[in-house]
Length: 89
Image (cartoon, rainbow, N blue to C red; front, top):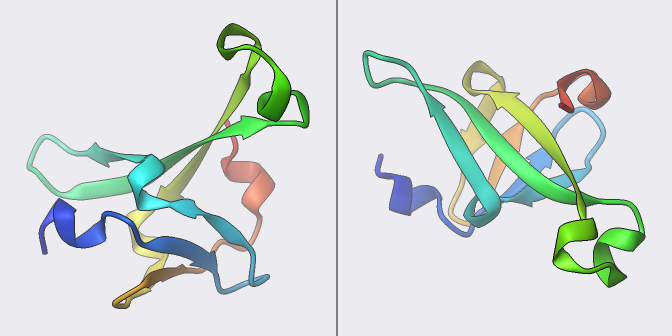
């Protein structure tokens, strides 16, 4: 699978049905041997993220371990994160 195959897919949490973000908004954590360790999603936090200036936007990082990926479909990636708040950095 190529990184371009993941681009644009929405990530959905199987545990609670929440939309976590798009892979186009993500980075990958890749180990030294070349395997994917995690998908790192970056999102703007809070209401001010919408209206604040670029410097004022707070960013949250959600690390999704690759082993939680259950299915990669044509439009979505299904993951199973039991406690999403534990993954926010």
